[in-house]
Image (cartoon, rainbow, N blue to C red):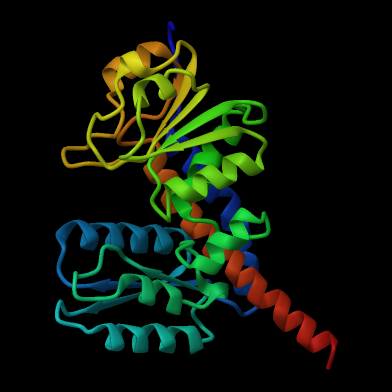
Length: 289
């Protein structure tokens, strides 16, 4: 394909944030300051960078960022206590636990401790179930970013054959469900899938979410397919081999500058959504008094 569309995530993210600004200002006038609490356990430099980026993005938009940094030796019980306190803090509207956590912590138990009304990162099993049944308010942010990019560029989903390579509970599985709910036909592939290149070669839309650099090869891509690379590996390398996939695709996300910036903007959106839900709840309480 000549001149594929480069799906500019920075442009999509800015559009999301521009539409959030008046909503944030309205909430503040109503006495609610949207607040995202981020929890970082340990000293993983990449995780620290991600948390800092998310906090800075909040503050640029006028969202309050509450940053909690716990030591490496924090126990599961201690982490659960911190999450419980944030659940009870009415000034906090969203909770993000940066993952991965240190190996001795039960990460799934920590995720499940986040109240569904504050699960703005879409990590709980309840949130996953609600997303699958099409009434989840806060789907996992990277899958939500992928859908946002497709919608921004008006790339059709309905009737398309989508292949998702990866089955993680906060990326591969939920994006498969979200595409299915938009009337795509979806195959979810993984490390045990046989004949993977042949399956990918049939796809109108490929989501690379396997966590391996340059894993998806250009010769696997059908001419005219849309390639959405959700991978981010050391050296700013995606899961799809950009240089060989780009000539075959009709549209492709770069790495960096593709799905990543939109993922952060969806976290901001979900935090604002949660703050608005809080305001709506207060309004209902007053009207029913």
